[in-house]
Length: 114
Image 1 (cartoon, helix red, strand yellow):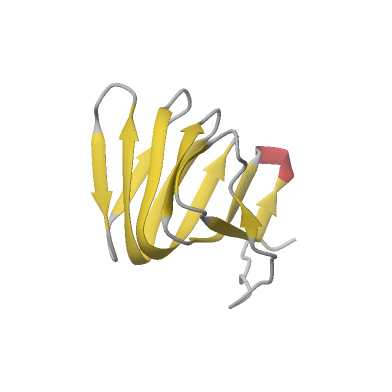
Image 2: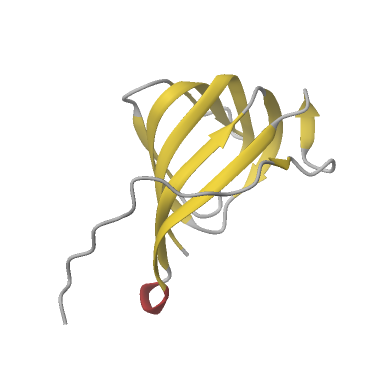
């Protein structure tokens, strides 16, 4: 069995509203496209898009983010803040709580380990 996987160039997913209980500003919509899953290792990868707005987040998973387009601010409840745009990369670790704000419609590539 080979251990080399070519991911699809695109995927499809429906746009969804951010749940009302998390919403802080605007009326953002998000779309998550899963391009790869390795269930035995609780690992997945794909693309995520979002429109302008701000909402609460709480992570139980580990996530690597590579910004493709747009701009966002991720700010922890502890005040740590990352402003990111095209080409920026960052990691969100399990236990992180704070806010995600999309300043201009954005797209990111992600890898998540649960």
